[in-house]
Length: 96
Image 1 (spheres, rainbow, N blue to C red):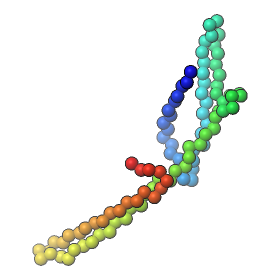
Image 2 (image 1 turned 45 degrees about the vertical axis):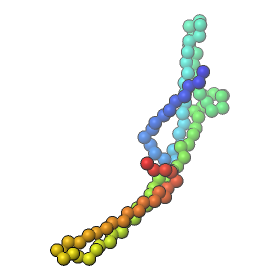
Image 3 (image 1 turned 45 degrees about the horizontal axis):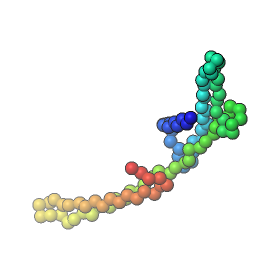
Image 4 (image 1 turned 90 degrees about the vertical axis):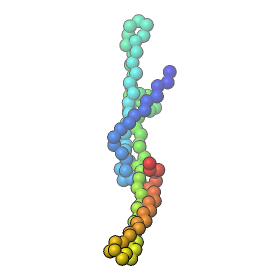
């Protein structure tokens, strides 16, 4: 038997604060004689100690620069401004 779980949580690790978590799985069932059998998980197969794990820290960031070029004033007093914007992903994860 194989059971796979996907867990979504709302706490996000940061570069200075990785998430240190533990988990425990509990299984139970009834044998043919009606007795309940159950056990909690452990990382070493011995005892019921929760399994520790760490969600790695990430540094999600990007750098954006902007420059403006102002054209000369037109005869009618209007003018054009051109903005150039550049963004570079500078962290250690992909952004979407």
